[in-house]
Amino acid sequence: MGYGSPENTLRGIDRKRERERKFMLSQAYQRADELAIKLVIRLLDKHIIETDSSKAMQELFSEKLRRLSQMEEFDIQYKIAPIRAIVPNPNFISQYLTQYITEDLINHKNVNDIFGDDLEIYQTVDSVIETIRPE
Image 1 (cartoon, helix red, strand yellow):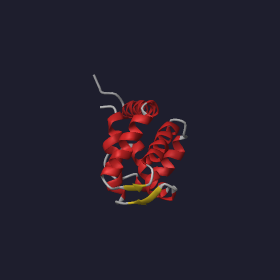
Image 2 (cartoon, helix red, strand yellow):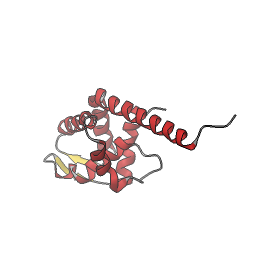
Image 3 (cartoon, rainbow, N blue to C red):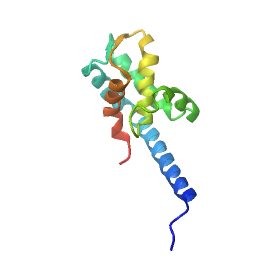
């Protein structure tokens, strides 16, 4: 008996990726406050961000995590395009937050400075966000 066609295999992979994506977005939404607190603590500990208000940063990241599930796929992909290949098998939520930090957060009134290159920031963000990635 033969194996499934390559088309069936690709469709199966696509379905699995879509389920993982939906699961991660759901977890980001449900655990937004917890993840935001951990993320801000990690960003401060790793000296990635310098801020006047960690509370404001926590609220900001919590809102970003909640809004991700309502965003169009195109908008997410557009945002992460500059760092699409930052690591093998990247976490799209970590990529999105990394780009947000490097492009937008620097202009926030409570942010004094941002340090580190894209990879350092991604790795710091992903060390928190990876907890919602299915195994």
